[in-house]
Image 1 (cartoon, rainbow, N blue to C red):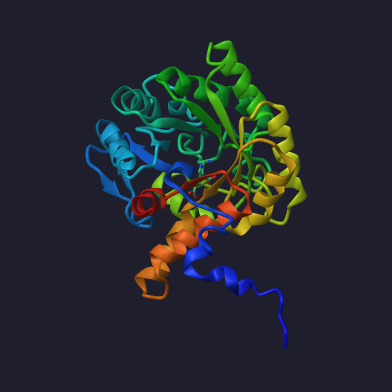
Image 2 (image 1 turned 180 degrees about the horizontal axis):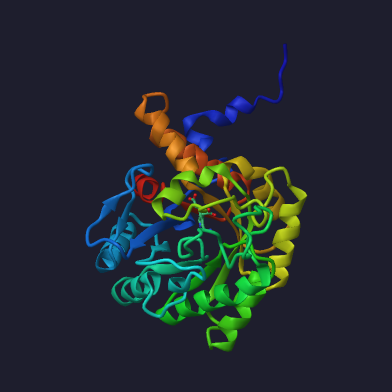
Length: 326
Ligand code: PBG
């Protein structure tokens, strides 16, 4: 047999890396950080090994740990001291995220991103203002247009605290335009905006909802987050956000939605981000704990695959562990 084309020639150790199509580096990664107003001590998050909720006083120290691994960007999530129907601690000047961002920007060189949503701050756990009858009728949940103003206020309060970028994640129609306009009106035209453009109603968010105490008290998020069945709609969502001024377009979750990542890479000329979410992290840890998977290897392969699909940047709980090894 005479084979002229032998792909195996390029798989030897000397040449593999030269012909490698995808690389992963610490500068591709963003690390989530949880700041908790209800604690004076660091509290480990059980379902997300290696992650903790830290008090505001420890926020800068926590971010220094991230920076020491080579990761330069953090996304700040907050657990407030109290919750109410309108999530008012999300946009309070002295809210937990605002206080944390002030400290982090004053004391570190990190690039700081604020997650802009209300679900951690509302007593009902939904991502906005809800209809009066929502509890009785689960098809009625978040009032879209009434929520926009609160998201815009949240983003402005984070920018005022020093955030470099804000990331609206409530899946309210028009949230990017509302946030962009409010930032610009408040003199924050330089603050970047990363939209959770294609955010699916996913069961992979389970561990995060425990970590951030943001599970809905009733019903679910299927009337505002996207249906996992829909691929074309991901492009539509991203187009709306691009038109409204999103600088970076995100897909969330990442691994079960790599087709959507690839679609957005092809369709848009903006950076594409992917959120490797809590469940994607927790399942690899759980299997590794049982001795069924090699954690380092599967984490690396997961993130490499997300980049190969077309993501430029990845928000991941593996950021520090991976960066440390790269
Ligand atoms: C807020 C928000 C959520 C996540 C990030 N921002 C939760 C949700 O939509 O329920 C989940 C992230 C993860 O699972 O890692 N809306």
